[in-house]
Length: 310
Image (cartoon, rainbow, N blue to C red; front, side, top):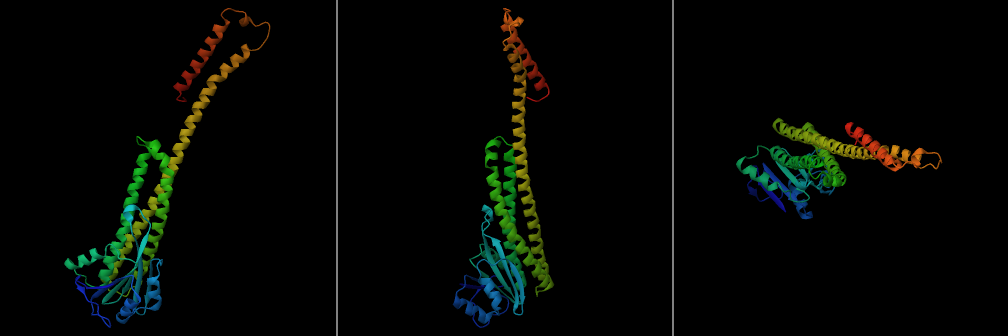
């Protein structure tokens, strides 16, 4: 369905064969008939149209004799840390804007509503608002991801740390997989915006707007890199904690073995079957053996506890 609005957000009836200036036309999943109607009003390069209709086409900018074309992919469900994306292709002309999408962008009505109380000054202004809303999907993803990482870090040393640590590794690897996909999409969008801000045939005011979105995407990409490092550090901390626990267990086992080592020696000495051993025929020999065992074990245990080894 073709939807047209002027720069104040007022809906118009798109007229085939040449719409008036200062118009924004949006089409979601255009049919063949709608494409023919659009081509009669908007000059579109054949290659650019093929890219705009390709389902998995990445974020990309190209300059054609007919005008500037930008494909921008935004995240569909950043609140759930979903890595699924949706494409929005902008055909930018000096006095009109054509946007094509695979599905209806959730923020399209919001952008149109902003035009009612803040009319756009140019087609580039509307393009900026669309791109800015798309960039917010990455900002929401980054914000939710950072909150999730903070929860994992607190869970490692909280009251239920054992339960959290058991789920830590699969959770972190799942987040890293989603982050990698979102980071790839963010970098592709950033590269496309860099080219748009550098080569677009637009006014200096519109170029400033495009550079603003480019800078926002640049900051978001850096925050994604920081989040990736934090997840890697979280795994390193988990590995260190597990190693520390293992060392504590091994230290306790070593202390126990050391306590029983002299006891085993004494038992071995008194267990030898020599005929002339005074303790064998002494009435208090058995008591002496047990007293030696207890004293040696108690002395070693006290020494280990004083040094913090047990």
